[in-house]
Image (cartoon, rainbow, N blue to C red; front, side, top):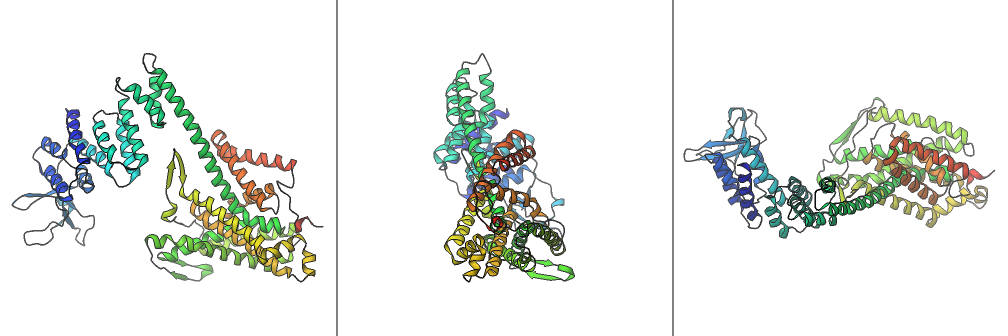
Length: 560
C-alpha cells in the first residue's frame, strides 16, 4: 500500500518541477495538507506540493513534530514557533500559509509556550511520505552540491518510481556535474530491470560510476547473469578511472605537502643556507607569525585580552563580519612577516652577531632562545593552543573527476609560488639582494669595497625570519597554533635545506617537492609513520652518496 502511495506521490510531484508555483500557492497547499482530517487526505495533498524551496522549513517542522494548529473561530490555522523566546519563555508564531506572524482578532501577535502546546500528530507512514517529499525538494536546491547529493540518494535507492522525477528534472538542470549525476542515478535504477540492465551497465561504465562498483561486482560474479561480460568490462573501466584519480590525487597532495615544506624551510634556506647560522629558534619564528595572525583575527573580531608578564592589555576589536572579517588573513600576512622579522633582527643584534663562523655556539645559543620564546608564548597567550579560524574563502573544496582539491591546499601551492618568486626577485633584482650575495660569497672583499657587512647581516637574518613568519601565518590555518608548534617543523626545515643543497633556493624547491611526493606516495601503502621513517632513511642514504645535497652553493660556511 505504501509503495502505491509513494508512486502516486512521485507521479504527482514530478510535474511540479516543470510548472512554476508562487510561494503563496505552495504555502497554502502545505497548510491544507497539515489541516486535513486523515492520513490519506494529508498524503494526497502532500503529493500535490510543487518544488518550492519555501516549503522546506515547514515540512521539516511537520515531520519533527513542530507544527501546531490555532483555532481562530473561523478556521484552524497551522503555524510554527519562532526559535527566540521572551523573558516569560513565550515565542512568536508564524503561519504556514502566509509566513507572516500569527495574530489574534485584535491584530496583536499571539505568543505561546511550547510546553503548553500539542503538536499535529504524524504517523510513521506520513513521516516517510514527508521525507520523500523533502528528498525531492532537494533536487531544486540552489546549491549544486546539495542537488547532486539528493540525486545520488534517489539513485542509490534503485526505486523505479523515481525515474519519472529524474527524467523531469534532467531538461531543467544546467550544472554539468548534476546532469551527470542524474544520468548515473537513472542508470542505477535501470540496473534492476532485466530489460534495461545491459544498457545501464554500459552507461555506468562510461560514466565511471564508483558508486555502482559493488552492484556491478554482484552482476559480474553471478554466472547465471546474461550481462557478466558487460559488467566486467564496466568494472575494468571504473578500475582504470580510479587508478588515474588516485594518481592525480596523490600528485596534488604531494605537491601541497611539498609546498608546505618549502614555505617553512625557505627562511631557513637563507639564515642557515646563505649565512651559515644554525638557528634552532627558526620554529619559534614560525610561531611568532601564527600568533600574529591570531591577534589580527581578534582585532578584526571582538577584540583580545592579554596578560603578558602580569600586565593586563585589552586590544579593542573592530567587530567586523562577513567578507570584511574574512579579509583579516590578508592583513595578517604582512603583519606576520614584520613581527617575525623584528624578532629575528633583535636576535641577530643581541646574540647571533657574536657567533658568526662558530656553528656549535650558535646552535646552543639559539636553542636556548627557542626555549625562552616558547615560555614567553605561554606567559602571554597561555599554555593551551589558540583558535585561528579559516576565512570563508579558504574553507571547503572542489571536486574534479573525483579528485578533491581543498581550497587551503590550493592556496598553499599558490602562496609558495608567490613567496619563491618574491624571494628570487629580492635576491637577484634589488640592491639589497646584490649586497646579500656579495657578502655571503666573499665577505672580506665586500667589506673592502665599502659594503657595511653588519647591516647586510642584519637585513639578511631579518628577511629569513620574516619568511618564517609568513609560513606561520599559513600554518595557523591548517595546524594547531600553540607555544611548541614550531618544534614540529624544525627537523623538516633542516632536512629540506640540507637535501636541496645548503644555500641554494632552487635546491630547496626541488627537495621540498621531492620529499612531499615520496611521502604521499608511500603513506597509502605502509602508513603515515612508516612512510616518514622510510623517507628519513632514504634521505640519510642520499646524503651518504651526496653529502652536499642536490645543488652546491659557495657560502660563508664553506670558507676557511
